[in-house]
Length: 255
Figure 1 (cartoon, one colour):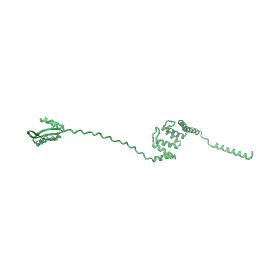
Figure 2 (figure 1 turned 90 degrees about the horizontal axis):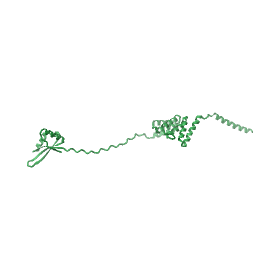
Figure 3 (figure 1 turned 180 degrees about the horizontal axis):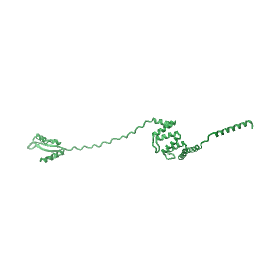
Figure 4 (figure 1 turned 120 degrees about the vertical axis):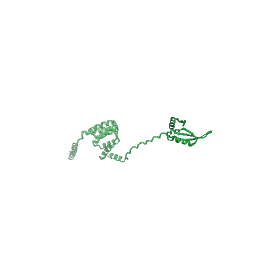
């Protein structure tokens, strides 16, 4: 072998030795990380094949081993009910695990979940805005965009009370016919003045009665004036009872 060939072989051996030395000096991958990656990517593959239940199983195993992104993905499944029963509380719990593990997008996911509410999880605007603010402060662009969008929305107006139509007015009730006044004849007089004088004497106006003087022509006797009291039947009945007690006559009344 000539000197050139020997030199070339030496350089190749030196290069291989150098690469081996670099490999020896490089830190070996953490065994647990390798296991977590196995479950995480296994879940991802299952999800893309629409095997959601298998994806949930794989990601839960990875999350239990400390994979925060797997915890976030598991929150998605519980929020949407894919491969697991939809459960807003479970979704929030897994998003929280991911957020505690430093996954910024999980704060955004948790904020949106609280803003909109989820299966069996009532909306909580205060919590939602706090989570969006945390994600936005960490530089997560979708969180910033959502906060800006919400700021442009008009303030919620108080619900307008339903217009209640007033009830229709009650049907007009026909007024009860005015009672027909009762009439009672007091006596007949030769002159109108005599009839008026007797009315004053009896003072029936105090009992709510009014006088009515009717002129009548009696054959062979000339003109006579009949005095009639007009008014409520109760007043006339009372007068008749009083007259009867005094032995006076009370002519029948007509209505």
